[in-house]
Amino acid sequence: VRDALLGWEAADIDLATTHRPERTMELGRAAGLKVVPTGLDHGTVTLIVDGQPFEVTTLREDIETDGRHAIVRFGRDFPRDAERRDFTINALSLGADGCVHDTAGGLDDLAEGRVRFIGDADSRIREDALRILRFFRFHALYGDPDRGLDAQALAACAAHVDGLVRLSRERIGHEIRRLLAAPDPAPAVAAMAAP
Image (cartoon, rainbow, N blue to C red):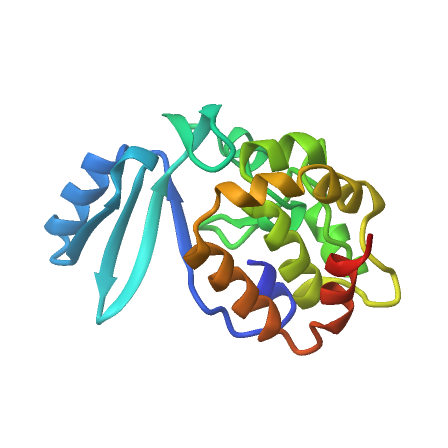
């Protein structure tokens, strides 16, 4: 949704449903699609349509997190599901009717080139330390370089930087490569290196 609103080609399309994963798989098979149970504990099923994968995830909310992985409860509430996301611009959704839903202020942030955590930045990072690296990557992609980085988010990233040691080298490498692939990663990389 975020990329489409900017007129960019979407790299992937993720879908959300109120159906539990088992029902999603049942419906996918009934439609003649290849079904891959990619993350059933977190409600994610991948449906292959003409060779193209689409992740379909059951609405959920976090019950408990360990700084990287969450135990979730499946739900039926789109705004509750949006609250568990990392950034306001990642909580945007598009209904089947074509209506954009924005429960976290993502439209304004997208228009202003602002990358903000949903709610309290410290809480979002304690839920998943990977969000530190994602913050800088998303700023390199969507942030206005003249605006600078969100001060609250930057302070939270600095305060929780020790959480990065719990991440796998592969995951860190993946995020850094994606950051460096941004059109102008230099301001975000400089901010990462700042004391």
